Amino acid sequence: MSIKEKNFTNWSQNQLDSTITGKTLNNDCLNSLSELCSNSEWVREMAVQLYHVVLGFPFHIAGAIATSRDEKLLSILVNNLYSEIGENVGKDHISIYREFLYYLQLDCSRPEPNRLWKETIELEQSCKDNYSNHDMGVKLGALFAFESMSSRMVEKWHNALTVNGYPNNAFRFFTIHIDIEKEHAADILDVCAHYYKKPNFLDMYECGLSDVNSKLVNFWEKAYHYREECNCY
Ligand SMILES: [Fe+2]
Image (spheres, rainbow, N blue to C red):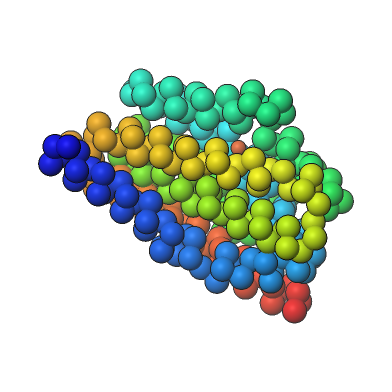
């Protein structure tokens, strides 16, 4: 293994490790998700807020595709979008998410903007803007930030809903994403191997990564404190 490859391997492993130790994943909300999910009103509100993010996601991937000039990234993103529209599991992911809403007896139409938290809107906007950024560093940093958090976040939701007695068929959306998102995050880091040593790449990567990460941290913070606002306890 060359020094360059070794350095990149160390860097990419550090990226994965920092997701686990960082606040996007290691926060009060996700750390106490099983407890929070014991309250059905909290789960129902979270389902609505996350729905807004889920609804936007395939379109943000499409935006990343349209602004990519890297063939490997194009291939990864097209596969990602292909799975979003249901080619792997026979149903598009938004429809699978709606199974969760049906189970919770929630309205499946687009949430009213005034129902959404500021933090939810800012998170979705950050993904939209950064995924479509023409700078490869910004784009890859943003993609990695969301995919790496998501791969572990869906596992936490799967476990928390299981522990609280929700039937498996109600939260299939989280279950099917556990492996898919891990592959997506690893794929993004593979593309970074081609750009890693280019001038300014890491600075721009850090911009995309930290913008999405900061919105994720704000979102989970809001979700954690929402339990007080909705008198969940
Ligand atoms: Fe998906």
